[in-house]
Structure formats: C-alpha cells, structure tokens
Amino acid sequence: MIKNYLIAIALLFSYLGFQGQIVAAENREIKMMSFDEFEPMLYQENDSIYIVNFWATWCAPCVREIPAFESLNEKYKDQKVKVLLVSLDFPNQLESRVIPFVERMNMKSEVLLLNDPNSNRWIPLVSEEWTGAIPATVIYSKDFRGFYEQEFHFEELEEIIKPLLN
Amino acid sequence: MKRVSIFFGILFLAAASFAQGYQVGDVAADFRLLNVDGKYVSMADYPDAKGFVVIFSCNHCPYVVAYEDRMIEIHNEFAPKGFPVIAINPNDPEVQPQDSYELMQVRANEKGFPFPYVFDDGQKIYPQYGATRTPHVYLLERVGGQLKVAFIGAIDDNYQDASQVSEKYLANAINALLDGKRPDPDFTRAIGCTIKVKRD
Image 1 (cartoon, helix red, strand yellow):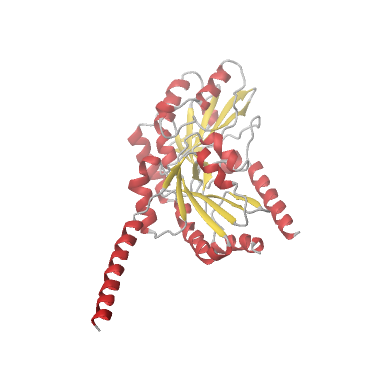
Image 2: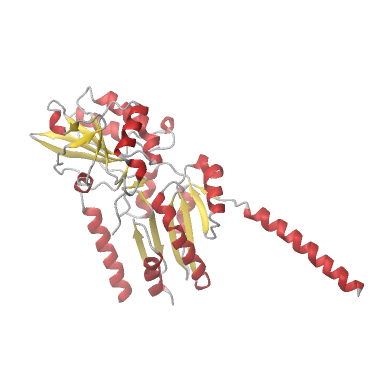
C-alpha cells in the first residue's frame, strides 16, 4: 500500500520535473546561418518533400500565410513532408522580434534566420526566377522543383504537395 | 506525365511573369503623379536632366527604411550632375494602410526628402516598369528624346550596414553613364517587400 503511494508520489514529481524541462525547451533557439551554411538545405537528396518558405515578422503577407505552412507541417508530418521557415528578419532582431513571434504563434515548423546581406549573390542561387520579394517559397523533392514568388493559401500548397506524395 | 506538365506549366508562368515590365534597354514611360507637396510631377518637368533615378519605395517596408538615408545621399550627389531621384509609392493603401498618401507626407517631412515622393494612384505605373518589390531601382537615361532603362536593381550590396557596403551598384551605374560607359552590372537583385495590391 505504502509502496504504491510512494510510486505515485515519485511519478508526480517526475511529471512536474518534466514540465519544467518543457518550459525551458519552449524558450526557442533559432539558428542563424549564412547563405553558404544554409544552401545544402535547398538540395537535400532523399525521399522527402521540402517546403522552404522565405518570410519575415514584419512582412504582412508572410505572416498571413504562416498558418497554412503550419497546417501543412502538421497534416503531413508522417508522410515525409518537411517545412522550413527561413526568416529574413534583421539579425539584430532575432532575440527581440523573431523568437517572441515564433513563441507567440506557437510555431512548430523548423525556423532559421538567414543572415547574409549580399542578397544579390544568393537570390539567384535560390531561384533564377526570384526577383527578391517575399514571401517566396521553394518546394522540392527528388523529382520536382518549383519556385513561387507569391502568397499561398493552404489549398494551393496541398494541390502542389499531393501529387508528389507516394 | 502530369508531374512534368505541372512543372513546365509553373516554369512557363514563372517565366511569363518575370518577363513583364522593363528590361535594360527598354524605353520607359513617363508619368504624372501626385507629390507629397500637392503638386503633380512628371519626368518631362525636368528638361535639363540627363536621366532619372526612379525608386519604387514606400513608408512601411524595413528594407526601404534601411535605405532612406542612402536615397537622400544619391539625390544630393547626382541631382546636380543631372540625375535626380524620384521615389514612387506603388502600394494600395487599402491593402497596406501604412502606405497612404497622408503618411507619405509625414515620412517625407520627417526625413526631409530632397526628392519628389509621388503616389502611383490606381497602381498603373509600377506594372509598366515591372517593379516587384520596394525598394526597386530603375535608372533611366535620356537618349534622343526618350528615356531608356540603363540599370535595374538595388542601391548597393548591404542593406544592413552602409559602412559595410563593398559594391555601390547604383552609384557605380550612374557614374558609368556620366563617363559615357554602360553600367556593369546593369541588373542586380535584393530582398524587398512585395508591392501591395489587392489579391483576386
């Protein structure tokens, strides 16, 4: 009887301790990368479908479409669909703007900050078609590569992804 | 097969949309747009200008804000040499209220813009130019009686820090024209905010 009681207490405390760790993990760390560090993420060779979205906290159409990317990430996460949200916020606002924003929106997709001011060099490396406006999205898999300099609704994203799923 | 057609369909659409607007060498259209001082401005109002630095710009975009001082510097350096800046706000205030005409006046006043800051009412001018973002620069040169596009792109290669700039694309392009040479590069890209237009 006492043994069960002690086990219950032990479980209760470990549960509380676990909660503590979750809270700490929620203080998200977002990696900052130069373009050269980031570029391999545009050319991964495996069975997954990658959705790489370029956005910024101050870009209203970017912010408007984040729920669509989050829904996609949630709905298809077991089907090898990977969403990557690449922030082009100013690097000196990572702590003051980007992290609070990501936490407030409870974003689950992977987020990183691209810090490389010489955008004339890397914009065409993302896509020759890109003139530099955000939001912009690259969707790619082993057999497909598309670039979209536009705002997305969830249905439009799904329409592109669905034929690529096996 | 369907995948391939989708791919080509998207490629075609992307190429088609990218091809809209001016390329270097095209003749640029003049305009008659309302300036923040209540008067209308056209390029024809400057018969002695050798060309114009047309910059699609706005009030709210952080990339524009980062460049405003440099836009002022460009005007102060090159207007006396025949290349004044004309900033055009192509955004629809119904989509982005921060880009209203009234707030243009506030911003121009705050910064003491020495150049015209005009409103593309009805959003008819920016599609002709093919501007896709703010800021987006079109350097025009008077050739014969026409205005030809000599350079399209960004002001320089570092929006974050003016002191870290290594290539002053726009200044170099204007200086090239003043020296009777062609700008090189004549086309550069930069991150910017989309132009705010009502979505169908």
